[in-house]
Length: 134
Image (cartoon, rainbow, N blue to C red; front, side, top):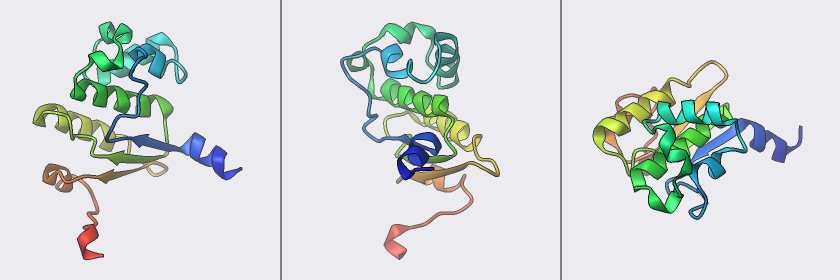
């Protein structure tokens, strides 16, 4: 398998800046990964209902955009997940729900790597690497 195909098929990201197309709708940002029913179900998993499908990204709050970014990751079904500050724009309760959702993906063939300053996340993971100690 080519390196590019490996990253395309196995690596998933949750970007701190969301990496969504601002001028497009939530549906337009997610439709390449799944059909409308699966996208709607996945949005529900991150706390957004189907009415968000027609919202432009620029109309969303930071927390809503962050959850769309997490939904995109879930739809990709990646085996290596890199989550850069996945709770940064979320309130504590929603952030906890997203961390639990991401941790639920951990399996023998799936790993989740968080880059975060959130001490609440540190308490929930198996290994913490403090880059100041490297």
